[in-house]
Amino acid sequence: MTLDRALVDTQHAFDGVAAAYDRSNAANPTLCDMRERSRAALTMAAAPGSHILDLGCGPGTDATHFAALGYRVTAIDWSPAMVAEARRRVRVAGLTGRVDVQHIGIHEIERATPPDAHFDAAYSSFGPLNCVVDLENAARLIAARLRPGGLLIASVIGRVCPWEIGLHLARGQAKRAFVRFRRGFVPVPLEGNTVWTRYYTPAEFERIFAAAGFARVRLRALGLLVPPPYLQAFASRHPRLVAALQRAEDRGAAWPLLRQWGDHFLIMMRRS
Image (cartoon, rainbow, N blue to C red):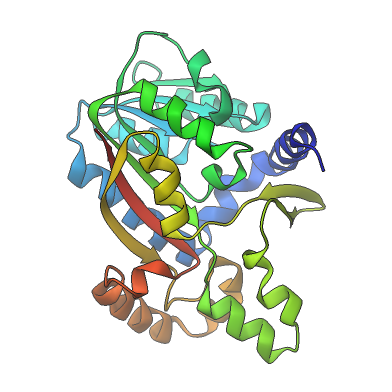
């Protein structure tokens, strides 16, 4: 697997699901809860009127949400089909003047226009940074496009997902239980195609961005006690249990040990 192939395969996979991506996400209560917490992290840290860089915007779900709240958004994505969906969503919402959707990968942020724009915050939801082929270089590129003191708020797919490990060990699938511990890119199936994904611990991710001039402000787990989004059928059968688990997770998700685990982690970092 070459890095070029990883980029092409991942782009093709997301092109294939772009038309239905937002509907499927909106129908998943666990994903909606995770998105709510990611959005809240940004709105608490950056005031309306701030200029946000949406890294891996997908069909524009978050870009239009923040624009409707009064933020200015430059949204980028590597998938042309996702970009088309995002532009359509922006037009339908009447937010063309507040959202600029550009067909640019995270690995080529220097192409974002206007070239002299420095953003107040960068936001990345549900793992686009896990698909970047060279995260060290991307971290430097992101730093270069943020103003001094600017924030990066990202939900990143983590290595240690207790639900996933327990579920697959119980099924006798040891290899699947520990797939996130593999180094380098891992092929993740998506509707018959492949998304090449790297998994990170919070410490690994933080070290990469610290080298580019970022310092951690806040860290919490997402999907620690709550089952991961792909266990939607279980969550639908046990809504009261999942709601109780969500409340417990919110109380302990930022504790020093627990915040290292979970399906995702939500990290906020500030450019020095």
